[in-house]
Image 1: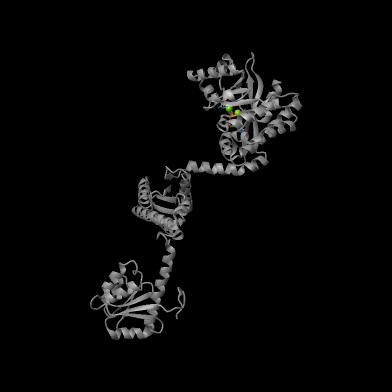
Image 2: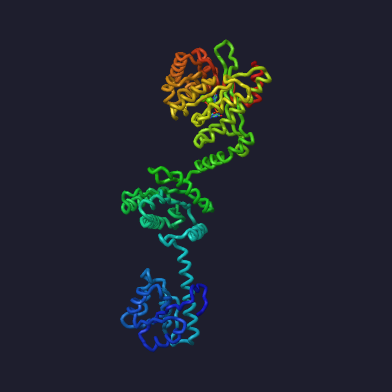
Length: 562
Ligand code: C2E
Ligand code: MG
Ligand code: MG
């Protein structure tokens, strides 16, 4: 047996010899017999029958052209149009020059001239074609995904980058299809149904990409990658997929998400383009109503930024990158306003992003609980600062710290805050606690209990951003508080919008009724200040008096005012 590049196994290959003349069949049989299993057919019709019955075992066909019943050309034509046998190679046996060219054009792999050459030449030609054919089959089998028949991942990227090399390549779209909850689908309906779903998606998507000169691959499990000419709307693809899934998998909740990245002509990194399509796709992972998402740079940047902040916060705290700023609260009931208190506000001096404001990370960290680390750091730093002022000046002003919803849910919150105060030799009245609106939407009972416990320990509770949500008025009747902080949005428009001013007057009346002082946040000009003073507001916190200040600057201000 010869060795070849595709020499899997040492078994004999099978050759089908098709010739109407017995003598010719015998000559070829004698030549091939030692190295091959040889099958014979006397005419084209017989040949087709044998090919169809034994398509998987026949490696090559030696085909005479002039035969009764069905000639060689017809055999080639029928074979090439039958998907199960079209890949089997033919060597044509002929003595006519014109027939050679015609058969090669029709798809024959080679020809052998009659009268026959020396046996070695025939054997060599037969083997060469078998080798070529088998090599091609191996490539073909890795080229396609066996289940769905679409391109395999490696070939997909090969072809896609070939497409990118065309001179006149237009803008292209990188598109990712992701079947929703495929694992669950398999578990519920079985792997056969799962396979069927994938085939359905592959079929619909293949048809679609062909309209836009595109290609498709099954990238991984239930993920398909599509690459095609750019166009604005993918509603048609979405509709086609939905229709087929609905038809074949009624009541199975089969659902596909489509993520799209519009790749400009000059952008060449395909992996990056598909990553972007994928991230668009995962953006709508959990929104069943929405099945199409187009990649949007801002959203992506934001996500990357948030991920980075989450990643960096531990180091940030360990390296003292968090800075506690202090914003004065001025008491305005007397003739001359005086510094009466302050609020501690965190900033993050990030090594890469510079000064990051709490607006960027408080909500983010509330979502994953990291806020507790930040808050404890701020409470500790604030307590240390108060201790410092007391040591230096003999006294200080009370400073309020923000307490988030997540802190309230911590069963140890009271002990934690108490121990910070104790550790620094302070009394509870030195540290006020601002509880924001967002906390009121969590467990009411627990909130009330925690607030009561904190007050029993002597802490003053300030209700932050009063009026910004729905529950605050309602909460006032059941939640014992010491200070009301009016939400900035009313203050900022009070001098231009009469309704805001009415709301402010109402809040001041409520506070008066409850006998608690009011802090107005966000006061930026003299008019606002004067209006608030006239209406009997107690404290003002805002840029009109001072922005939040770094600790040293605040210390200077405090020194002067004491
Ligand atoms: P907040 O507790 O209501 O703090 C007041 C915010 O209003 C601060 O924003 C302050 O800089 C800003 N502000 C004060 N006066 C003016 C003014 O006249 N004009 C304008 N435009 N703004 C003014 P900041 O520092 O960006 O903090 C935003 C929010 O982040 C805070 O709102 C608070 O809810 C939260 N936060 C800040 N630091 C912490 C912290 O250490 N822990 C927690 N849990 N949240 C914090
Ligand atoms: Mg606050
Ligand atoms: Mg506030």
